[in-house]
Image (cartoon, rainbow, N blue to C red; front, top):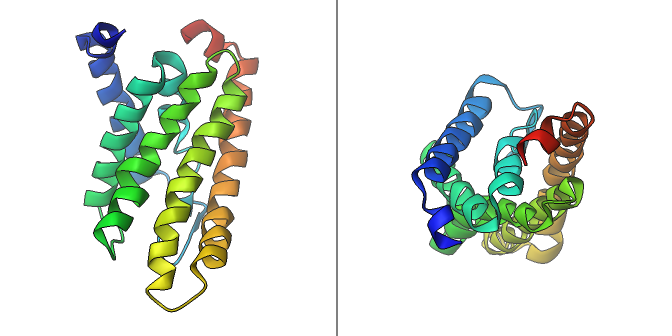
Length: 171
């Protein structure tokens, strides 16, 4: 299992997936951007979710963490080192949880984005409590605002790919 994860083929595919995710982030403007970071994109997470479904949880988490570090280096909002880890490498690595539900891609998408929500929610508690605000409620509302939109779009795109037999062919 570990040999398959570290194969040249899988690492090359992870690199292409991360590059595609970065390109989608850069060329397609977000539909909505939150004031303190986070946005609803035009299926910006689908390549990472699809890769996790195709190659498994470990490979998906690796690709997500790499993308998270790149995303942070391209202008991420950081107020605390723990918040930086939770909001970027760990939150995007959590998308790899989709790989646990390879036979049920839509369930995988839900759990992958739910994993990202948990990481961003915990990071938000750190962020919002630094402003003396009720961090739990503020973080849940803030992160839920954009991640629910991201979930709906990702599910819709994944459903379209499934109906076009694009998912089954490559999983």
